[in-house]
Image (cartoon, rainbow, N blue to C red; front, side, top):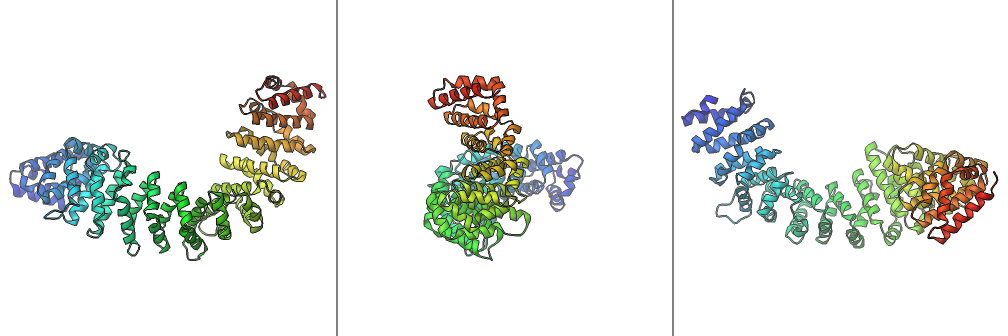
Length: 589
């Protein structure tokens, strides 16, 4: 075969090429594949009339990764580039070859750039939507778009070059001809466009005012009553676009979001709802969709229907959670009757992985609804609190975290809720186990904050004792090492309240947890509020335990810090430090 390729007899070369096309594996079995590749290039140079067949051979072999590497070393792309300006038959096979060889091969792509093949490719992309006397076939258009995709995909240099030739505009024009083009052409054009949209070189903001929003709306509108072969490409494009804030608003304003909801409503693609959830993360989009009303009504329908697929129910819960980001929205959502639907969803049974997703989404929505203070007490009586308590036993960390969030928010400023949580059998022990044993810092933090909330708002000495006995002092003390100032303050205030309880078991927990060692850094903090609250805690500990009082007196660190605080810019901090020093000096030895 290799000898035949070197022949001056065109018929012999044609026969050898046909053998390769019929049995491409014979090339893989060659001892010297590079030599074979060079012989093909020689045949291309010597036999112009065989250009179509030789290009077809390169296209066929280019499907194999091993050959793409060899072709890159031999400079095949450089030899193929002139063929892009040849007759249509030659161009078709040359485009196939270039596209296949450039697939995931940056060296071949670089050769196309250096050999000035990009302008030719860009010209052919423009031809796809141009009013030609002899229009391109659908197959040719697919190959052109496929070649562009393989050339640009995940390659910033080539994307920048092709964007310089405005190929994105040509693709949008092609997509605008949705009533005239085959579905396969539209699919490939969407994939090529998405490769360009993913590039850092493109201005997504600039495309907001282009025909693209209308084009995508029209494509989706046509899909509502048709099959979904196109939807994957549309979804990929939208998924890329909605990472941009301007496009998030544009998708809502151009009614694309409504089309996506229509698809879900007709039991089409769950991915459509995922795009809507992404839009809801933008406050402007969230409020527009909430005010329109149709999104909430659809979410309620999906949550309440037994026929709704589990994954759609989970996404519907995410919709509710994202809508619950303002007080007015939270109030309206609770009044709509969504809470019982979320509670039911939090008890959904099924596949373990799906259970985790659905329970997480429902509890996250209930957590957001708990932010509004007027909702909290009703959540105790409606079963939200007990649902969250049950969810603490879930093996999934995301479920545990959101359950803790529901309980913490629901307990804030709610005496009855705090006492209910504390007196629910085994709940405090479970909370302390979660904080102490979980390997997830966010669970440790949220659990500690919940315990601090129970101590602060329960107004019950018995509850405080129970928290301490179950190991809550250690969990709350861990908040003092947290980064956010507000969380440090929560821990300090809760510990101060616990320290005022005259109970030996409570006092012992402070002694055993080395609480004093955690407080010194807080006294040095720049926040006067934190320093002041920490001095209140020290004062309470001093009055509670002689052991702690002695440790404070014996600590040079404490005495030094307190002496320094006497000159604090905050008169409140200075006076509290002065008073604490006096009490230390007069306390029992």
